Image 1 (cartoon, rainbow, N blue to C red):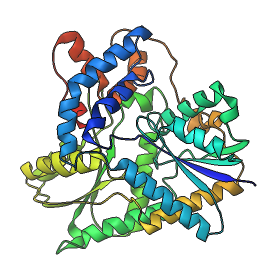
Image 2 (image 1 turned 120 degrees about the horizontal axis):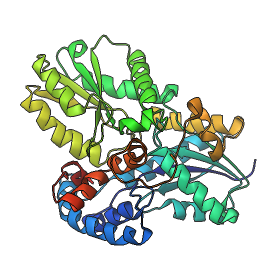
Image 3 (image 1 turned 90 degrees about the vertical axis):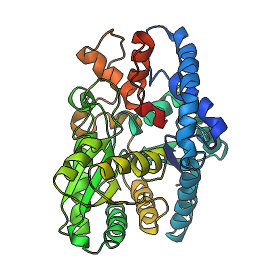
Image 4 (image 1 turned 90 degrees about the horizontal axis):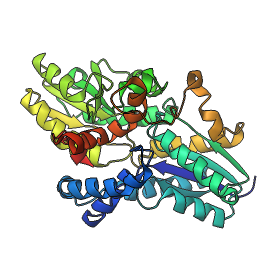
Length: 387
């Protein structure tokens, strides 16, 4: 087969407080995130928004140690995966490609080309597929290889989603069980699955399979856990004026409090590494919401990080992909009822249906809220401060 490489894809995050401003600038400079009618506005608007948000964002990162641990954890996952693959008889080079901070996807592609990788496995660190996460990274890869075909390895395969993988489900079940067993009555604790939300239009208009995969993943984890606990699935990180998948995490927490729930274990189901949305949004913001609702026994399940069962699951995914027919980036759009990974590229003013489809990605990171503030002078900026 020749030299094998594994490309781990993730969002990225600022390593230290000084990185927050440049990181935000990269986010807002991306035309895949904010789609403007005039390209020359892109970088000036990105600079303006990043400048306004840097101080608030830095304050949030101070709460979690002064920077995102995402790079450190992802690189540790890569090292553990390399070792696990070697133990299973498969040597491979591991590369980390982040969308908006170092090491960038472009850097990873240059390295694997320099290493003369002959067969590449593209493995996004998002268990469930969404057009806003895995899809965005796939789009970038396509662009890079179209611009410079020499960077593309002779053979590659894509793993678009892997929420059904047995090892992943087992790792999640073990992590949940560890938290449940900290309570006097573990079987009576309410299990609260909190997934990152997406605009409803992603699912209804763009055909995003994310909601279906999240719901099925929740069922599979509970089946693997095999305990009688009641459970709830909700969606966090809602921003902007468009409708997002429901129920919303904050609303669901309040409702459980009204129902008299006192013991709660929160499961960050769509995240495999600790970062701002687990350490700050769940651990600080949602904990406060829960306590105000009367839920005083609040525990959060850690992300899989380098859990041995989880790393073995990643290794099994890689090995299985090497023995199966290759799946190309162009084929991903044909999966799951011919999902359209990227809605038609056109600009429309106002909150029309088609504009919501495209602008849903803006809402994903709070950009609609920022643009509305720029136009109207009215603030909708609370959640984007998490960035």
